[in-house]
Image 1 (cartoon, rainbow, N blue to C red):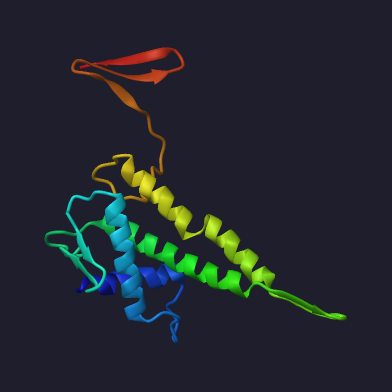
Image 2 (cartoon, rainbow, N blue to C red):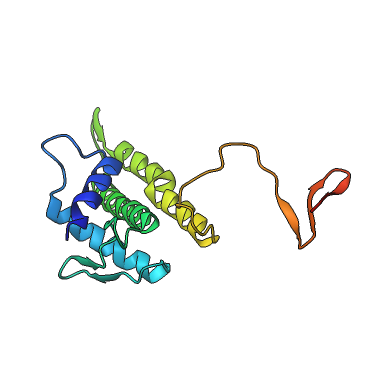
Length: 176
């Protein structure tokens, strides 16, 4: 169960919930992480077969054990999915509080908070989760989901004794 410390720290960073008093208790975040892990394991396959028990708040084998079963893709995807779930809950609360009252010449309008939350939900952690999930699904085996190519690159193709890359002039071959 020592996975909880790493997951909770990552989730608090994503939610910007590091300053005391914290908005979410560790127990609540553990529940959200377990729910997110259950959802992620039902959507994606990982190198390790993670078993999630939402009632007991356990994930086996431990995804943070550096010696045997560490899976950074699983950790990142579950943490981002958990942030998405929390963000959705906050948006639901904001929608419930989005009211406008007018009485004579005075008025109170709380719809701005709701509008901001809705915009955040469109481009927030749920959107990030879908992007990272797609990166993971595109079979970038051996790489961590969320990584990027930060320099120019060229796609090489071919087989056996012919290797080439495509260019404006057609194929440029490299002899072996």
